[in-house]
Structure formats: structure tokens, C-alpha cells
Image: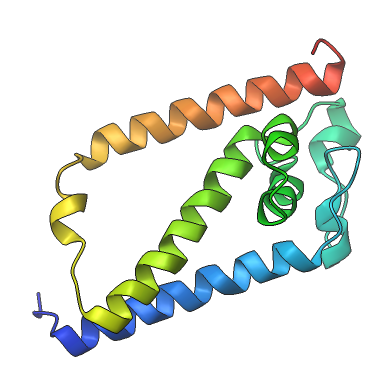
Length: 144
């Protein structure tokens, strides 16, 4: 595996930061749906097939809406819309800030990432996503 030079690390970090900023900018320019789902339709995407076929939200229903609320600073509304979407928006913000920091300073966050085993991060991520999906189903069905 080739060794990354400081210049390469800075360029990769800048690329990640710009990608995160682009996604956050799209979320900012979308008008969040008050229904908690459907904001993605502004991007030309179709209505969620799960809702059409089974009247159940898919695991990503409400994510775009939650991102749109998060970038506007409407955190409680974002959490109530789709908790995992809010978490992912905050992760994207961290990537943007961290990427810019690395691009400017050359600092490496690699030691921090090796502190957490990938298997545990995966389990935590899947658990949070499953819980958020369950919450979204209960919300959609009117139990919450």
C-alpha cells in the first residue's frame, strides 16, 4: 500500500470536506417538507415505493427532510423527523470542518480513528439506524 504524503493527505481531506459541504449545501437549498417525508421530491426523485406499496416508511424516509432541518439549526424538528438523518448531517458537518482543518494544517486524525474498532462502530451505526427506522414507522403510523 502506498504511503500517503502530507500533500496527498491534505488533498484527500480537502476533497472530503468539499463533498460534505456540497451535500450540506443541497440540504440547505431544499425546503423541508412539513409532513416529515418527501423533501427528496424537490430533487426529481420519486415518492418512496415502500409508502406507496405498503404504507410503511423505508429506512431512509425523512433523511433528506432531517438534513434540511439540521442545516437550518432546527435540531428538535430534525430529530423528530428522522433521528439518524440528523446524526448523519452532524457527521457531515464534522467531516467538512475536520477536512478543512486537515487541509490547512496537515494534521492527521488517523490515531483517533484507530481508537474505535470498526466492528463496534458498525454495530453502533446499524443499531442507531434500526432504532431510527422503528421510530419513523411508529411516527408514520400515528403511534407517536
